Amino acid sequence: MPFQFLNLKASCLFVLFLPFSFLFFTSPHTEISIGNSDFHNSDKISVRESNHELQIAVGDRIFVFGKAKGTLEKVKVGMHVLPFSQDVESGVNPNSFTSVSWKKLKDGSIQIRSSYNPWPSSLVWTVYENGQLKMEAKSTPEGLQNATWLGLGFNFPDKSLSQISWKSSGTGFGQWKNPDFLPMADPEVELSDFQQGFFQPIHTVKLEFESITLDIATETPGVFLGLGKDQRIENSLPQLTSDLAFLFNQPFLSPAKVTQSPSVHSSGTPFLSIDPLVLWFHFQ
Image (cartoon, rainbow, N blue to C red; front, side):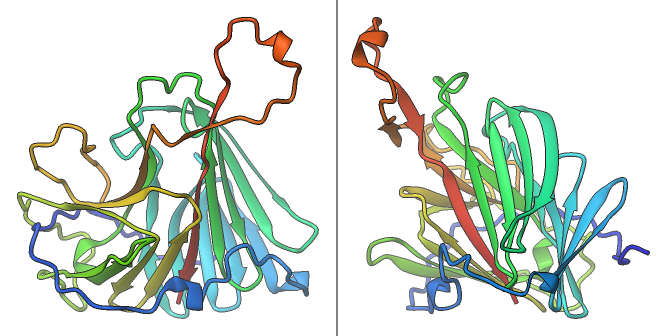
């Protein structure tokens, strides 16, 4: 019998571009050991599959992935449920879904793989035995030559979010507190449309909801956190349709490793590869 969840609907979040109160906060790196997949006791993870979803249980956490598109939909920590649905388009990169599959790896972790056209051609979620999630989205440049931003978004109940704090790869850090946070709020009640959101370069992010805290860290250089809708004049900034998005700019293209003789590339056009978007998630 599958786990039972409330049928909650995530709504859009729009925020004021207010002066930030800056502070130092603990990086998710104190809790997330990036790249650490050396786990044992594979029976710690269990999977329940239905026609519509995969429910992956690790300790007191349950991660629900929709089989329709292979995306994360909600998370349960203890007795608390957080609708946290993934938006692959985010209003930035229109695409079409092509396939989804899942498997159990030798180390006991569970991997959900889906693909889209043109971005991301490969979207992989890995659930590890310590309850951490790794998401990797990547693609080839084909079909993306005119794209200025690439990324993925997420939707969640806006009034359940208390605050967000972030740290960039340099010395920048900041905090935003949700003035409309309401404990025990109905997750289906939407906020009024504020005029501006914000767009910040980040390396780590902490989202504090009413009952669940989420730490996120990225391995990808040049990632920006977008929240709400930024109405500033700069046309280069993307307009988001999801509550929150992690984006990076198309100029972050790196030369691909040459696997053939240079004489094969008669056109003289260098092959390029797009840096994958890698995010680590820790719900608690």
